[in-house]
Structure formats: structure tokens, C-alpha cells
Length: 201
Image (cartoon, rainbow, N blue to C red; front, side, top):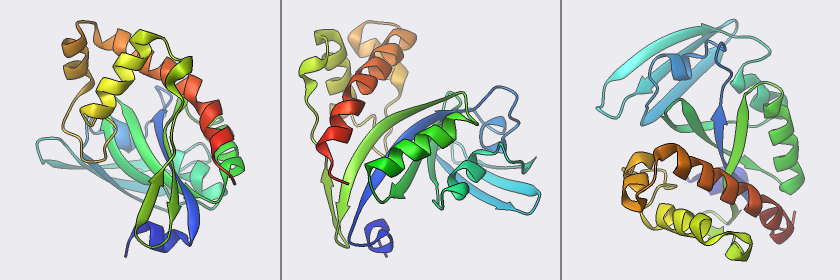
């Protein structure tokens, strides 16, 4: 059964980059700073996490469940997070919500418990199999921001099954990894308002 079929006739798919606070002790990031897949089972007072590294190794970690846990932030609003990957300690998580107001509420909830949250992608999901991507107006971006974002999209950096790393893109552009990361964050921030205005809840 597809994610869209589970989520109803029309919902929004939201992809978020989440940076946890340094001392959170969350096993999603303490077991490995890089992960190609994450499975979480948080029941009662203990959280058990299986992290699949890019090399295919599976590492199991445990942590204590608290009100400040990332999973609890989603569950308080009734959403089921899908943890896609971890890169340099940043978690990519997908969640399906009803409308753009729900996106705002979720981001506000997450900001109470994490260090940083960024919107990576917002898509309208309609029917059991079809996904319609929201279009972006890139005119507000600088040429450098646009070039970095376009390269990231073309190379598949934002794809779920990506095999390209931020450092690879930075090398291709001839800039540092941190400089590219800043460009992408700034570009994404500029697009968020436009995305919310372009999606009818």
C-alpha cells in the first residue's frame, strides 16, 4: 500500500531536515552520524533504534523516552514520522499532514525540542498513486543560490534514495561544504513563504 493511499485523498507530504540539540542523547544520531535508513520503536520509557549505515551495517541503539524526544513532538500532533536518512547528524524526516496550517504547527512544535528544523520539500499528494510536486518561483534567489539549488535537484540530492553527498556538490561548484550548506539553507528559507502561498489547504 502506498503512502498516499494510507494518507487519504489529498494531503501534503512534508520533508524536513532536523538537527537535534547536542546533548539530546537520541540514538538516531548517537549510533552513527551517517545513516541510509532508520527504524524507531519508542514504547514506554525506552526507545530502540536500528540505524543502517551507508555501508549496510545495522547498529542498534537505545535511549530514554522523554517529553523532549523528537518522536514525541510528532505524536503530540498525531503524525507518524518516516525517518529517511541521517547525514552529518542531520535527520531527514517525512510526514504527511492535512494542510499548510498543520505544517506551521508541526514546525513550531519541533522548534521546542530540536536545535534547527528546515523545510526541504512540500508536495501535494492526491489519490492512491499520484504525487504532484509544488512548483517554486526561483526569481527571489541570487544566481549563486539558484545554481546551488538547481545542481542539488539535478544530481538528486533531495531524493529519498540519493547517493550524492553535499561534499560532492560543493566540489563540483568549487566551494566549501559549509558554504554550499549555507546557500541551500538560505535558498530554502526564501522559498518557504512562496510554497505556503502556493498550496491550498
